[in-house]
Image (cartoon, rainbow, N blue to C red; front, side, top):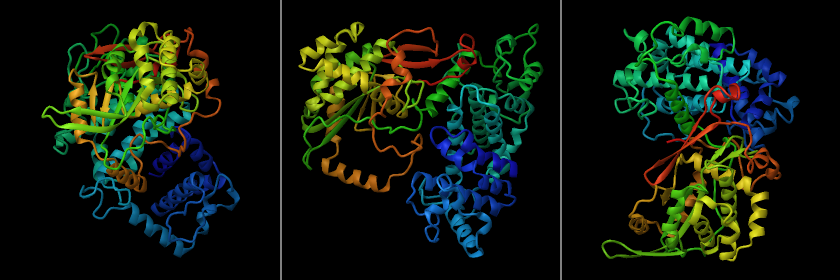
Length: 612
């Protein structure tokens, strides 16, 4: 249990995605902190250690913030371990009265009355209440899945050992005793343990976490606790178009040996690249006999299906460009402020620069994009509203938001188009003038971005300004837009979202009627202002949130000199991954795949994806 606790603590400094990892690493590698962690031998000691580390992280991110609990007289500088390690608060010096105060405050904040076995909270996910069983489960799985998708392609030995250890944390110290008991019934299964020991890459980590979570879900479905839940992904796989079956994930069961899903050995062993002695032994013991009959369903899903699982998994848990970004993609104001009694209709359109269906969508709605929107409903009601319109780009970012390595679906020319169109949005937002530029560009998507000079001239735009913007700010704008679209789970273009709620995939033939219908239900500007003020006062973190405070959406200085810029306009020999573009109705479905083989082991992990 002590080892599991240390593993959980260490994961923040070894595996936490984004900039938060360096903060945790600097705190946890302080000599005093390391000695205090080594000295943890009891529940109280563990509570006090985490209390100190949490305050230290708060002090690093928010130096003026009052330490927890607010009733104590401790100063933030007592936890400024990164900037003032010699002045840090020492756990061995804690007074009996302060110790009692801290432990009491921790228990009030984190321990739910009646225990975690019961799920009885009337208010779900209230940050000021102790977590219940469901909140703890969602938080823990979110942590594991998010760590998985942001792992390096080939983690180092320390990272691999720590990642494997996180599943031992569930077995040894997960806070819900009932959940821990259910977990213990299957965790020691020999096949599962062998797959656990063989985790050696980002891809194998994703697959193991996916399988384990589905085992937990299948167990709950079997017991009747979660009759309405489904395995992930809830879609057909393989040529047989079969859904995943609960029986494939039921462990223990009398048929587990024959029906249990296998992660690695649906293809000949010659295709598997061992990383060390453990994996070689695993392959020797569990791989099918090349001379014998091949493995058959239901306990074996083929290679394509495994990559489909990885693609869906990353789409669920990964943001293009990582978690350290603003997740806001606003354009300059296009219209005068609405009066308090005006309705406000929001329309966000998610596109790609050379997507044919996106071009058709822009052409069909361009006449509707005006500040003073007006329409007549089917029942003859005349509706007027102030339109809040915006476009967002969809694509791939193999780097980070601050240092993007951008990839567009239709090739390098599309990335240029994305930059130019976002720059038009930035500099010609007034009265949505930039929409005319987009419409002109989309008249012939095969000639994008060559049409840019003609379209700029036609609509009285400064081409030099657009080009300068694309070169200097374009990468940052595109990275911001890709990240925002990914965070919202947009994977089909065009996607149109009305009033931040109603999503339309492709462009329905009756979209003008739909838009008018939503305008009739749109809130008044005065209501939006009140809602915004309330939200600002009570804002809390949500799933897929950023890990650091980002105050500005402006691209960092020097973005134009990053790796993406030097590779965007040329086709190189570097193969990052295969991108599949499929038509689906009136839209484009974007899927990202990577196969082992050419390009070394790096290609065995998906870098990023956008997939339905």
